[in-house]
Image (cartoon, rainbow over all chains, first blue to last red; front, side, top):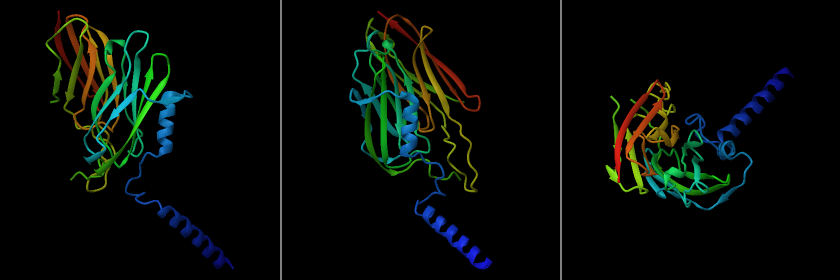
Length: 157
Length: 106
């Protein structure tokens, strides 16, 4: 009787482990941002505000050979005057270990709402750029990028 | 040790929008890589980059491990008056570097 109980427990545990096993590479990449983390990171920035699509242009090559250094340019259509300018630009990703890429603070003295940098991408994924305007509205653009050689996965010898 | 590369136009017309390019040499260790023996390499990144134009901050970037090694950042500003740009990078392990460039505005 007692034996059967433990056997049932064992099978239950094994079943649970098998279900976990269905998610590949859990042990290889313990930290991976999920779409839920992406949504949470965006919510941290925008609060409850509505994020509309448009105004923002996100330039990233659609096919990336090396995820360790990917050129990225974000520009926002804005006159950049004292009354109407971009306050900040926030860039997020879906599948790197962390959902944030960078936050950039601009102002009317920027003249042009455009920033460029080089980023790392750990996987084929979606990148989202969100701009906050001086009137408090949020605008976004997203791009899907295919990465053939991922960043973060190589070992250091 | 660390070296900054700054590209600011030497002169500009008043009101002209100029592009500023900056590069700081830094490993930007993500904190997610492991050595061959399995130990996690601690995070070592630049977390903050700012630019002041005659003392007033005109641009500030907050960086994460997803920024590639040797952070290269370009942005724009309106050339308002002759003076100096001060750049500052701050990061983990007490990393702090500054650089400056001057501009003549006609």
